[in-house]
Amino acid sequence: MDGEIIMATVVCTRWLDAFPASYVTVLRNAVAANLNRPHRFVCVTDNVAGLTDGVEGVQMPDLGIPMQRQQKGCWPKLSILAPGVLPADEPTLYLDLDVMVNQNLDGFFDRLEAERGFHALREWNPTLWNLAPLKMRPDRGVQGSILGFFPGEQAQLFHRFNENQQECFERFPLDQDFLTENVEDVRYWPYEWTASFKWHCLKYYPFNQLFPEIKRPAKAKVVVFHGNPRPIDVVPQGDYYWGTKRKFGRGPVDWVRAYWLRHDASWTENLWWRKSSHQHQAESQAA
Image (cartoon, rainbow, N blue to C red; front, side, top):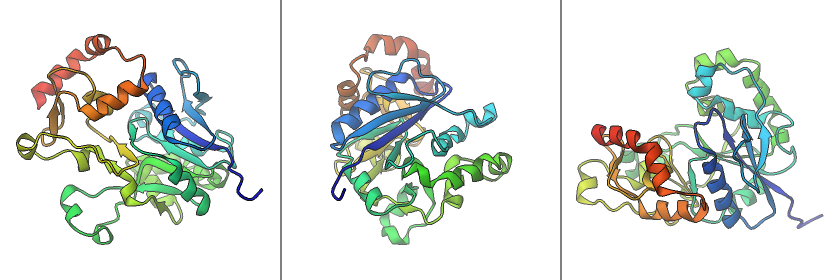
């Protein structure tokens, strides 16, 4: 029926406990608060333990991916493209667990339904390239944190990976490199819809010491945490270092902390510190 809003799918993946189940809860709650249309929230995972109400746990198919490739390269993520894992005819938005939903998400589905195909985030350029107009910056291909597609249309892409795994592992360092070369006519999300915490929010040393405030990118619908730090690294109260040697900060980032505590009712400050004290000591020494 014309004008009918069909069910949408929001999906994330989790395997080998690289992220605690609380990340799924936070993302699910943030999506529910920022998506107006009917939707299901799915976690494709090798371990459904700990998933909360409102999350549909779907068993991740065993694709025979070697353990070392599961630990590096994010290859199990491609299981969301396998036939039968997700509803074939529903518009589907994939989100990495370490993204922060910053604004309403309806536009992603509006765009996906208006223009079928495989939608992805365009990989960002290093900081200095931001001085040039977007059309003049090198196209670095797909960044895999935010994907949009109709699952029933992606069988060929999945089979291309699954039937040629060893060749893919040898040719591509990451799953997103495979997607860059093998997706036909990728459609990039509008650039202003997303921001990288690492590239757009942090300053290089020593400017981060002169201007320590880390501003929230208010216009971005989604803020992506890729690499170091992860969102949870900048949530706890305390005096600790996080980040890398060239881009680092100290203590909590107030707007990330507020987001996390709003969407994770189980957050316990003391428990988190007991589990993470050694990690923080190592990061502090490195910084």
